[in-house]
Length: 456
Image (cartoon, rainbow, N blue to C red; front, side, top):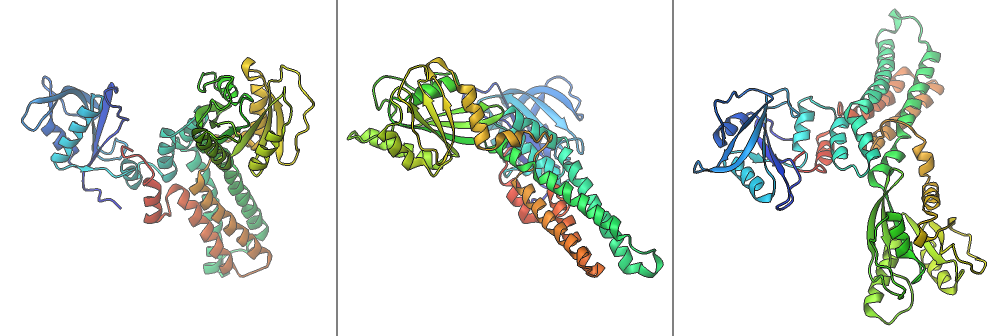
């Protein structure tokens, strides 16, 4: 765990060489203000008070001006970390921002570790663990829906829901322990009330767990591979779907030599679509490499779109490709549906849905998206209208709480002594406390915050 007496610094904004208009360098710790007063020359007669912007210049070691910038001072505890925080708002781009950072380090400030600002905010009681994780999820959100989930957690809605459940556990635990210690002085235990309270608490835990699927889908998204033989319209389908000319389209077989990637948002879900090289037998070495990558992309995809040509029907080549990808969830896409062709006799085994499209006219895309969401169960997951969603770590804690509560129920039903009731109930309360950080180990904190970016 970090020593909170030292002062840390980091670049708090994404830095793009020669392109950023503003870059922020952040300091947090007891020495932040004194160091700022050494490296910053304000214009006029400054008033160094909290939450006031100062205009001036950042100084080099020899006293010359390095950059014209703004300084924001946030005095403890009215800051994100609950410590003294200084932010230098400099001109963007890599050169200036890195020189400002190096100058701060030269004055004795330590470079922050990944997630250390958020870790300090947690350790200083500024935020709980669900809010800390929500900061990282908000920064990394890949869709507006994912950002909304993170924002709800950042506002404390997940923490509040967990607190309600944990409080119920603790209330029952206190009641049972009082009976153990002062049984002769208290009226008989109302077992029916205890059972009802435990059932309702277990149901609330399971309701929280049910939000995890939606959260995982919105956070990580899907990987979809478009496969098929050459010239069935795979690249045209990608272009129509993404509304761009992302992939090159010609009448020549083998035009796509490598996997072409496009990021789409399908009704709120981030989707990585991989347009692959047409799979066929070929003597072309470069095309062979592309086909090998196509097969690899199909194996790693969450869902495979097997595209066939409506005018040609189901061919022997389609059968060969089907045999190579049939272990993955499959949707059959019958492209060029505006033209006539033979009746299609495709295998039904393993194919979750069949959709007709005409990529050149951009028709059938809505039906394709509906089929995709249905195939992965996203339509059912999206029906869960919870404002927040638990992440993988939080789900694991809830799973332990669920198991412990189920054991308590079993202990109650088998008429075990009250001491046995409290053992698993205490385990459930501990597991729930891990979600918000009330009962969490240093190893868990290291695992959580190591995944954060440096400036957070």
